[in-house]
Length: 295
Image (cartoon, rainbow, N blue to C red; front, top):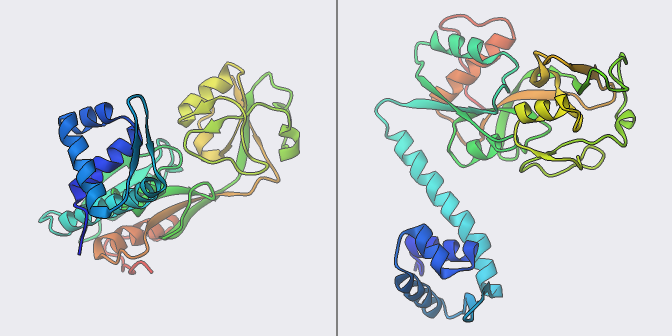
């Protein structure tokens, strides 16, 4: 027996996120008394208190914390199921491809052109994500495919094909102490201010302590005004803006641009796009070339 309705769960998640009934009610566009009664009915039905309330403070109980964690995943799963069902029933199916701005290593136009020659080609919508958000788009169904940079994005649950492998470069002002070097080591960057990427956890030995940046354009601007330096896959730094220099980082792990899709997605239209992309990078893209189902 299902003891909570989806709408009730949405109400609870809103209050748990705001820890304020008035703000949550405004977010949900309902009256605050109606929201309070809905939460009380949930608590009565579940037999546990979800919130500790006072005249000035609202906090989650341990039961509330558990429901918040699992409830958010449940709502995401329901949303993904609805999106996938609607997509499967679309009379004119289309593909949704997500990437970060500029994150295609100059392959996107060729992939789209190659795919357009497939006899079963469909419209392709392009979506843009934050530096680490592309994998989530594919995983939860907002996108069918993603151009992602490994190892910087989590590919768990995704099948993928590597399209491009490249070195990583330190991007520095032309007046920087390292600008004239043929190459550098990661240790040469010790003590330099490097960015924190919004939404991207730091990794040992490769974490920044400087300003938070949301995209490459913002990063390059801050490097230009000598606020920090950056380490990027080479294709993300090209063309190199005036006043900046790219220096290869010889001991940095290579970056891979991968085309990723949900490992459970076996639809022919996804397989067709994957085949067109792989044929392009292998130099064998031809109209009507055979396609392989994603594994």
